Image (cartoon, rainbow, N blue to C red; front, side, top):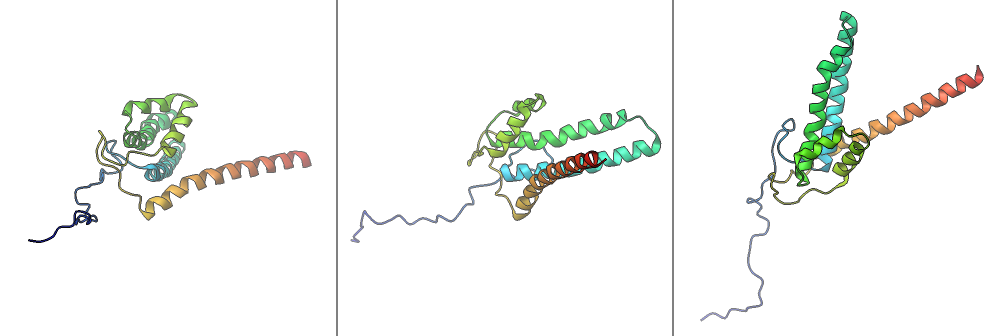
Length: 172
């Protein structure tokens, strides 16, 4: 008869995560979940793509002498899709309804919503919307750092332009 010590630790494989899966939905689909870093990275990517597309539309409209309203008709649905997809995916990561995305269209509330989506921690486990988002990669972290840098540089250029304009009017 072997002697069994009741105080010994159980023998279990704790490093095996094969039961746990991450959300692998492509970034352009409005289903699935994304974390904070990927949300910021996706917004940065979409923003850069939108600027390029709108610039190309503006060039085409100017070159072909078309009405500027075409930019709005073509660009606005595209822009809305680019803004709403990461927002919807982030809301589902937080366990919130996709209908919260309607708040994007309310002035000032949209800024609070964006900060909430950026700062609130998502569900770590599976929620009603699916598996959790995969941990951010190094590329996600690099892309996520681009958007704040662009905003800071844009604010800085605006300040430099204002300073330059005020100096020119003072000297003139």
